[in-house]
Length: 207
Image 1 (tube, rainbow, N blue to C red):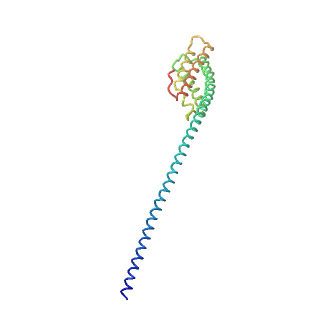
Image 2 (image 1 turned 120 degrees about the vertical axis):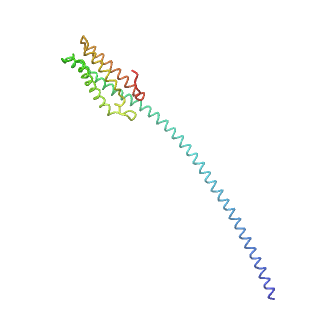
């Protein structure tokens, strides 16, 4: 009788263990399927998010380009307006210099020591440079393309003006009208050179 009970217990154990193995196998398969499904789901979400991000980024780039074009147009307009205003300031300052230089010619003529040409030449240069430096100091209050306006001036301008002053001082015949016209002409040349240097990025003028 005892042998029969033992055999029954063994059979029952095998039966129960087989059921547990099958159950474990089922849950393993189910878990694997769920993991695959979850992976595909996450992959689809990530893919969709990347596609949406790509579209948004493309749209943002297009809008940025449009805004840059608009800002460029506005900037160009403002730059032209700024240049026109600066030209008015420059013209007014240079026109005042014409009167100052004409006064220099008159004063030097009336001095008794113009026979000493070398000393007179130094005096003319000093006075002309004083006028030029005073004007340049006024230009320091204005900027263009991030630079002080005085940085666009040309050191040669003083030589141009000094040559005209010296020529008028030592002219055989005093003619105030001619002196004014010659000084005005050299300052028109300076204006033209100044404007070219503003428009061409401070390149050296060939004038």
